[in-house]
Length: 314
Length: 278
Image 1 (cartoon, rainbow over the protein chains, first blue to last red):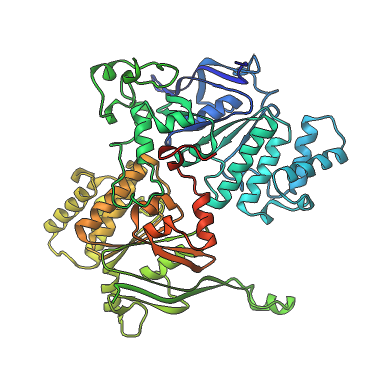
Image 2: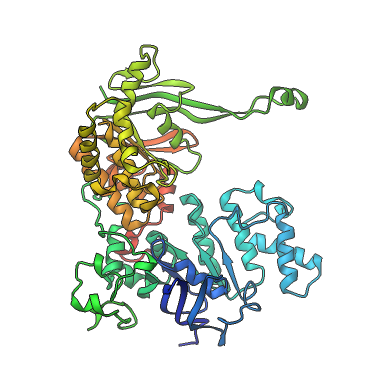
């Protein structure tokens, strides 16, 4: 197998509160390869966005990376991300209205990004901007338009064009379609799939929507309380989840089905614990039907490179 | 006769510039038709869902059925009473309000942050003068909290002490407080996580059975709707483009727009039920 593009090795992101150390991300290890779409899924507070920020070096105090390594193309980047951030790795945020400058034409914003990263003249950069817009499905003649003249989906396309401008090897998309309608969401997800396929760009797709995961990603990592609960090929994880939390997530996701009206949805009791109140042992054990004495005492490691649950031990 | 009848509902919004500006620029009035001649009916005890994308007018309809907004044209009859008719004087309107309650989308914005939970839930009881005795009032609040899966001890807490799912339970308890017959749910779970969403949807299902409630469900999420509603209306640009029983709509969508919505909706079922599509 080829070397991974990005490797996260036992990463922990912590927060010092009084005498307590709270871990927003705890001992997380992940690998991502070129041309692959990896899904990070979990509920609010699971640490998925924090992981994305850590890769880009966007962790601000009081949070800090307390241990672990992030290796990108063979080099450690957890200490110094300046040369990588924005050029080799770019980010797409949730709200396209906030991530574009409303006072500047989209063309100028694209040209600025291109000139920052490549040694080209302004005219060349302008041509490049046009071809980028074409690639994401926007009429290049609108290059001089302002962001507010675009719809939400079009704006997200502009944001994707901006993210593509430095020709990154990795794109981190943090809930890129949460603010969009379903039909537009489908278009944006198709666009991301096309980019991964044609450009060989690796994409980390952060989402809480199991449906989006099912339709878009190649592999998926399920996070719970900042820890990796389960990781594997999307088909395997969704068809045959090993971790009780993944099982619960899959079962509680409503699906379009004629019979679903009669049945009740499966529900996981309780809610995800707060950071300052993560239970000892497996963080999921208070909500788990299968929890036993070992689960309450010891935190399970990742078994068979798949599931962090004592049940998956053998 | 159906329990809720909306007949040729229409709502305009006037987005024109001030008159003087219009005169100077020689521009006509700018009228937006948010809801355009929409008719539907809901039987008693049924769950009816309106689905559509942003701007399709689904929330405007919800507001008109709840009486928060007057229709520009058309009428709404609930249990034979015209909601905006001349027969309803102030008192009758008040009575009507008691029978229709609403659960809003954002559990963060729909609860007053300065009110204690007990008072939030007590307010409809006081407003409609349902229970006079103070002890009985407290008993009723405790009962309501119990029905939505919260505890009696929560009465003296403030909304910020609760998670999103719990807050939505409080909204539901408040809606139930006036013993309504119809509850309008405007995207009740779109701000919630999946596992919490399942809890809230199951609660709504249980309550419907227990109190034989009639639901008007507003959502953009076809998967949520397929688990909740037995009849579905599809809205596009303020018009009802298709209406059918839930099973029929999902199995055999007729309108192009419905087909498009169904194919665009991300569905986890592609893996769970069958082999991968591609």
